[in-house]
Length: 146
Image (cartoon, rainbow, N blue to C red):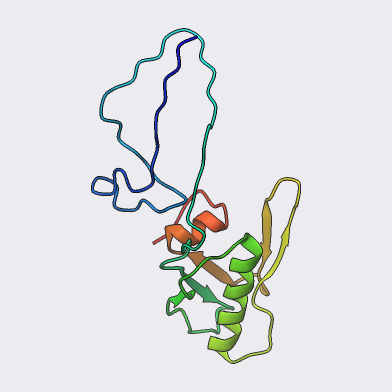
């Protein structure tokens, strides 16, 4: 059986893909690879630094309701957020501190089987907009709005 080893390194194509991060990246291989027939693929090794930041920008906007004029962007503190719960809890705390209110801005529930998150906002006209890719990655979102 023939073995082909391809190394994928987060910093390998940083000059081509400016949005690459340690946990979400694209590589351009030095030569085109053409695989014919059936192949088995395996991850043989993975490594990551002990300390890294998966949130660098963390930009989002929150508006409680139509009477709320606060729509300035908010930014999570850069750092390592271990889970969606860490990110959402930090967002909730930041919103509460910024708006100087005791009202809970976000309620969230995570299905531990599927890892899907359900975010509930306090009013029908409340708005939450995620505006940075790093934040969308920890929340496992497909699309970022700018």
